[in-house]
Length: 363
Ligand SMILES: CC(C)(COP(=O)(O)OP(=O)(O)OC[C@H]1O[C@@H](n2cnc3c(N)ncnc32)[C@H](O)[C@@H]1OP(=O)(O)O)[C@@H](O)C(=O)NCCC(=O)NCCSC(=O)C[C@H](O)C(=O)O
Ligand SMILES: [Mg+2]
Image 1 (cartoon, rainbow, N blue to C red):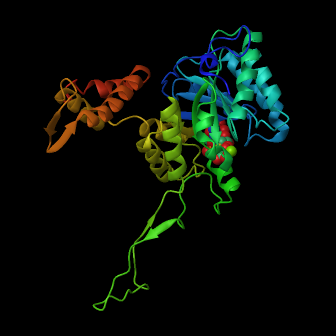
Image 2: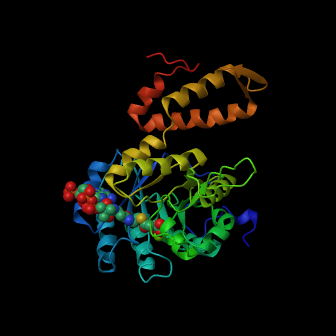
Image 3: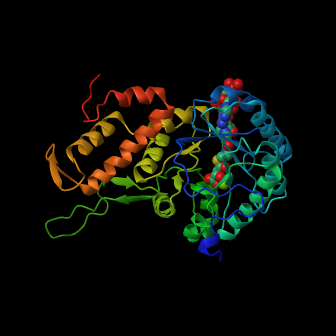
């Protein structure tokens, strides 16, 4: 166990000091691209500024024969692209794969100054984060980097979910968690074949009608309600991340054509506390940006509550509803997120600016 006094000490001589707080940088969409795919790679420069995070994926969905080309492709893209406000992340290969050591060694020494976050797949426990943590520190020192690269873990094994709190607290580099629903479903032996999203078989059914003797007619037509397969895991992620001051994300939604269900799944995650999601196809970026930005109506209401609550204590009535210290805190979450997003998104800034500090829409 690392004692508290050593938690923020660099893990290699010459490595940058770990951050005390993980910055809340907007990351509504983490857009995946395969750097070995020439068509996708060519689109990266024009996507800068349209998406919060561009992620060069080296793991699953990159063919085994293309692993080296993907790694080199990401180095080339990182060197030749000015990312401006857009963050550059990578997803490295799994820690038990033959590629991961060279992924980290090459990327950190060649383009470590451009990399914000390393996403680690199939994290099982704190030991996986400790391994990456030390290696990153050694490589950062070797490369002379001045700021630490952060680490993001994908939850995609039952063991990872069981160890969720220790994973979040394993290193000051921990930036956040994503759900990996496809690998997680397989590891749990869930009987689904989809990449994220719901399933029509996972439902609850309305109670049966009863006759005057109280006998239930179970054959009667009844409404069913589809449930969310991922609610439990996302809720655990949100709590573990909030406790450790890091950020939870939904993961992939594989039915690219079903933009409506994709938006629903993203919105559930947003409402529950996630700050962003993955985008697998360019058309999912707009969905994520829309869903993970508070609506103008919500920002207007939140600002009205802040204005009405004065010094922040006591209770007031607004539109027939009670507001108090606790609802004020909820509203401040909304207002602060709107402020952060307005800094990087001119369209949102204009929309939010039309709402005055008192919550009244002025334009
Ligand atoms: C899903 C795709 C295979 C679809 O690709 P494609 O059939 O080529 O789609 P389109 O014809 O509609 O594409 C139109 C043009 O857009 C380009 N394109 C497509 N996707 C991207 C992208 N992600 N980034 C940039 N550009 C993209 C196409 O090249 C077309 O270009 P052009 O012909 O010039 O007009 C494909 O989208 C894809 O491979 N997406 C990424 C998949 C991925 O990263 N998967 C891994 C993450 S999910 C996962 O790992 C599971 C998780 O770990 C878990 O366990 O749950
Ligand atoms: Mg996976």
